[in-house]
Image 1 (cartoon, rainbow, N blue to C red):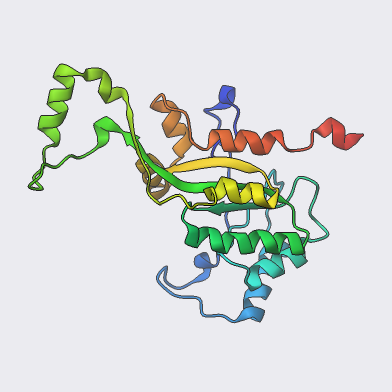
Image 2 (image 1 turned 45 degrees about the horizontal axis):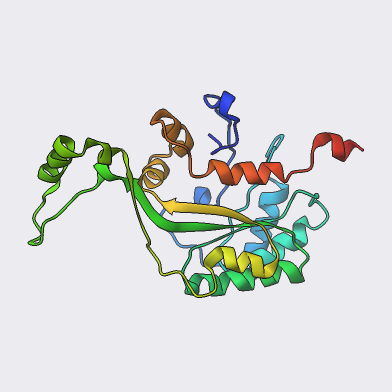
Length: 239
């Protein structure tokens, strides 16, 4: 299911996703791909031209960090096919060591004239329902059951709250949002380090559908809404 693509009224509608990866071609999922640039570039071209993708609403290409051969090849191969609503979606984590690499990526996009659709800050904070936490006492022994029982008895309303904590120190330059501002590109939002997202990914399930079922709003939905709002309308394109 495409995360957040369906409107709220169509939340139960599942949308098929076609996936292609070199991992599908390896004898074992543990095998490494030890290829130099020309072979990697040839495979990227094959994925773009030889795969029967069918009719697409979106084509997402997940690239490794940095500004390597893969990025240069993709920009060159797709240069004539990119439309006004196509471009790079840049994801970073808040710590400075990650931002240093992503600034180079944004500079790469500027030099190659690849539009940046926006920047997303991943793992911006840890977020989980209070009732889902495991608790330990000063000696390291599990105190979860006793603590939750006390909360249910004395302050049950606290169990409806989420616990939020910083995972990485925020740099002095404003994190991902400050970086986006300095490069003049949109900042689309933050995705927390949420165990429910991790569980959905590990199970191959839809995190958004699970969040709706649990009566919670998907952390991805506001980001998707901003991306879709920025797309040219069909009427404007026809004009």
